[in-house]
Image 1 (tube, helix red, strand yellow):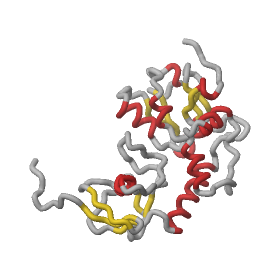
Image 2 (cartoon, helix red, strand yellow):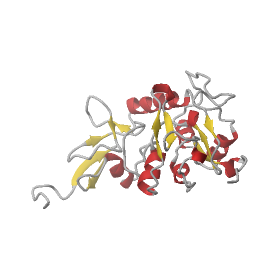
Image 3 (cartoon, rainbow, N blue to C red):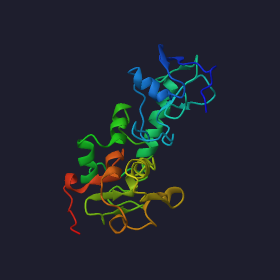
Image 4 (cartoon, rainbow, N blue to C red):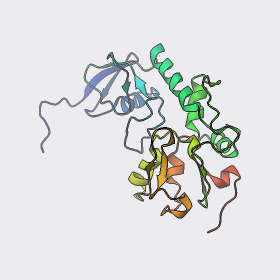
Length: 234
């Protein structure tokens, strides 16, 4: 299919007062990143297909609702604001809700991943001034939480309570490694990631490549060795 001769070679838009020129099809997040403007994300990574799940990247484009920057294409003449009081309030509330049932930060696996810069959820919470959780439900504090843990893998510890269902692990497994092991199971509050036909990770076809753990933005998938946990020998 030939290119549309009427289509512009580049689009011009304004992001936080800065004029940016990008190719058609570029997302707002990509345009902002190219201009040196940080738009926070949890579900997105440049290595993965954007899905717009977490909504932390929302920006104001002058419409009735905020737009998810990671999936919204740029338009010629668009004006984008990434740090308005409304946008920042939205992000803080979202982070508070995500942390409401997060496991105790004193958990050794969570502490190790956060110390190594791998817990992006906790890092974003700190960046947005979220320290006290206004609606803690106690899930996971002092115990495994209602969604449970899975320690069956030889090298990867799974804490379903720390999962925010961003699907980065699924996309890493499918799109980057092409192992097709991960999926979802359950409904509502009990929804969680699953391995094969909802088997324990260590009994699934997982090859322990570590891609899911590498792309996970929370303490849901952590390295047992880094966390000082017992390594199982197969």
